Image 1 (cartoon, helix red, strand yellow):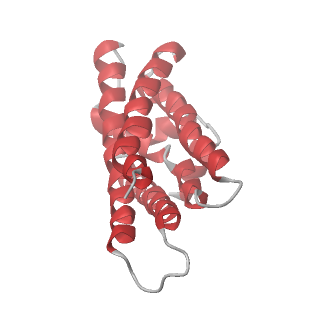
Image 2 (image 1 turned 135 degrees about the vertical axis):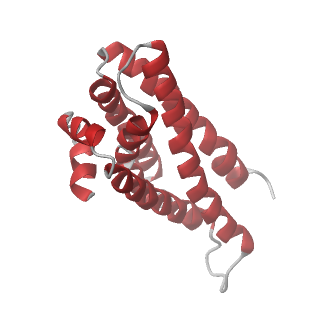
Length: 180
């Protein structure tokens, strides 16, 4: 699992050809997304936490749960849109499950979001954790669907916008910064 995540993070296109043929890679993809989801959730939880207070607050724990579940939701939103564009519109070769596996492996850089509450690093962590998976998914779409780079880029960017920008903005960041 970690080897797949590292190879995907380093933009090794051959990893997606391996994932495409192995149904068992879904467990690796699920594990990578779970690690990224928990890291993102802990980062949001840390931002939402009240310093100096002892005990557990419901809103802090709820923000952790929402961030984790939003990460899984974004994975499926991104995969559905990328698959529809890659397969249906651009004539790609991969099925939905192959696309889900490939995009799931690309979620490894999102684990950097655990540092989202770190002073001086928050914006850099959000930028790297949000953009690096996009670049990985462009490579994934190219190799998984066997389509041109420009088609892979369009499919990845539209899915990324809805999965990584819109869904977390609606469910995680808007409530986080809304007045109490």
